[in-house]
Amino acid sequence: EDKVVQSPLSLVVHEGDTVTLNCSYEVTNFRSLLWYKQEKKAPTFLFMLTSSGIEKKSGRLSSILDKKELFSILNITATQTGDSAIYLCAVFNTGNQFYFGTGTSLTVIP
Amino acid sequence: NAGVMQNPRHLVRRRGQEARLRCSPMKGHSHVYWYRQLPEEGLKFMVYLQKENIIDESGMPKERFSAEFPKEGPSILRIQQVVRGDSAAYFCASSPLPHTPEKLFFGSGTQLSVL
Image 1: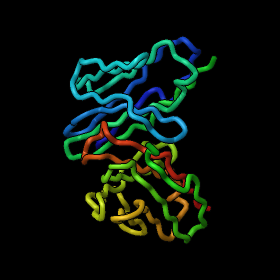
Image 2 (image 1 turned 180 degrees about the horizontal axis):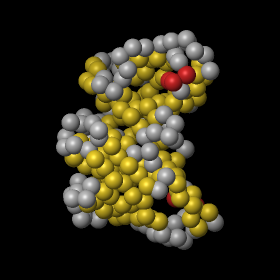
Image 3 (image 1 turned 30 degrees about the vertical axis):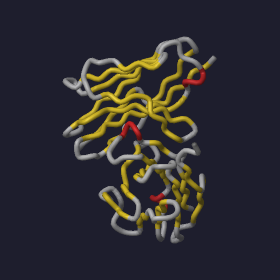
């Protein structure tokens, strides 16, 4: 069965900390992996990764994919309270099917 | 840019009633996807529609659930004779092109509670 597993389920950190969120997957005919930030319900797109070893970066957020080991990580450096959200990982396959993980709930406290 | 608009935000129904969830895609987007998020679970695909056509409904239960995306107006997800297990958050997403996940925009969802 195709699945996407995220860890940890939840995380509480202090402002300024660096966090690493994990996403492992078992999805046939992989095409791409995407990260979303879900705050106040609407998931918003962060990154799409298709190739192994190429880091995508946007400000304090970065992500990388390992297609051999079937996982991705999302790093957030110098966390701020505005980073508090649920971070979703999803895998899109060549059959145009989307598989979502259950998310990691990040809370950043001042 | 109003984004993907879903209404209502919250919907309460008693068992046996009908639930109608509406989704207005972003301007210029003709591809609409519906997802369901059950408690403690990830988003699950339900149905993919283009204007006036259902393209893929493989994730939608065969009974009681239906979806449409008319030429004019919003996309509607309809659940007849709701049961407690239908309680979930229902998300709509739209894109300007098919199967382009990086161009997929989500609405804020409708939280359906069945009493």
